[in-house]
Image 1 (cartoon, helix red, strand yellow):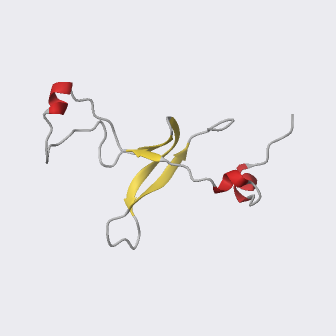
Image 2 (cartoon, helix red, strand yellow):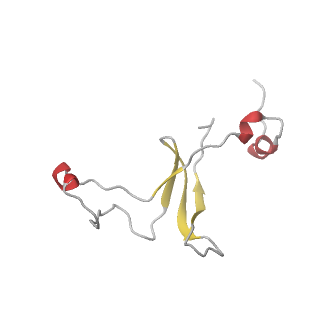
Image 3 (cartoon, helix red, strand yellow):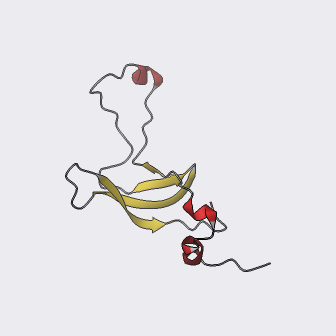
Length: 97
């Protein structure tokens, strides 16, 4: 079997059309498990308690596959409070996503 090139080589290959395909990453800040009766009664200004704290890491997913973890931060030089994620852990994807 042929050896695969490293990820840096793959990412910088301008002849590979797949490197220019956008991909959606979902950032999960936590989960809530309300009862259905509580969910249907939610209204404007209701509070939904999550299973995480403000300083806990967030999970990054492509589809349903966990790819990394990180911390939410406000972007430097952001006047409007733009959020960014500083990656703290990259999950070993083995053969890929």
